[in-house]
Amino acid sequence: MAKIIAVTNQKGGVGKTTTCVNLAASLAAMKRRVLLIDLDPQGNATTGSGLSKESLETSVYDVLVGTHSIKEVMVKVSPGDYWVLPANGDLTGAEVVLLDLPSKETRLRAGLYEVDQTFDYILLDCPPALNMLTVNALAASHGVLIPVQCEYYALEGLTALLQTIERITQALNPSLQVEGILRTMYDPRPSLTHDVSSQLHKHFGEKVYDTVIPRNIRLAESPSYGVPVLHYEKKSRGAIAYLALAGEFIRRSGS
Ligand code: ADP
Ligand code: MG
Image (cartoon, rainbow, N blue to C red; front, top):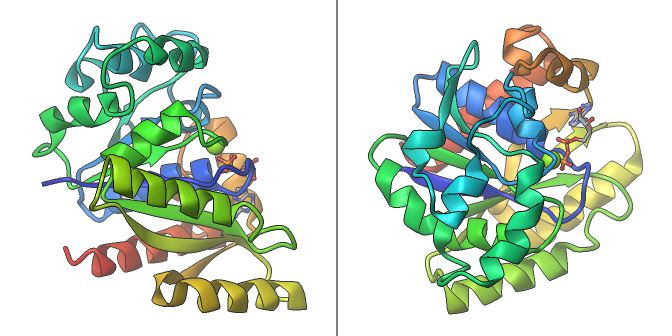
């Protein structure tokens, strides 16, 4: 059975997409079968995995509205060696279209049954909003991975996210859990980093991953080549950190 993880934080620019692409590639390098689902109309996980947004014939939008199944739409990427359910600007309209469809919150979950045995891990790259796409992601997931940038306003907004998770738990998905808190763009020098870290530990305890993702220019460069950092510069600090995260992630999920 696939473990389904929503990578969510309604703040933009905290490293959700970077984490999805590079965790997917690192898990694949460890011989896990991985599907990455792009749920952001910006399609950054799609292009960052080497697919062209413009030339998609079908996308996650078609799965949500029910005209195609996931297996009909997903694409294997290379050199990443994982599968992608891509997105593009079409997804912007999904929000409105979904409102008129039955079971609007659980359409992704329904689509995922088909690939439950096909993958070990399914990662969902969420948009920077607590909208209907994010609700679909949370309703479909076992766990939520929350990337947090260690800066002054890092904890702001986490309360709203936790309330949303709680609401989804009660209404749609009783087994939803916080899978882990990931510190991204980590700079060990400023004392602020330590303040944020200790606050995260206080609130989330063991849910905070030991692995931290450093600020690393290679992580910012690799999307423009359409490859995960592991296949751009495998000895970079970014690549090593995401491999370490994949190891910790697998250990924690007990597989
Ligand atoms: P989100 O998906 O949460 O909006 P992204 O993953 O797109 O965030 O990251 C925002 C920007 O920061 C991108 O330009 C990305 O390349 C860059 N970035 C993300 N993580 C790192 C990192 N650890 N080091 C350097 N740049 C990073
Ligand atoms: Mg993103």
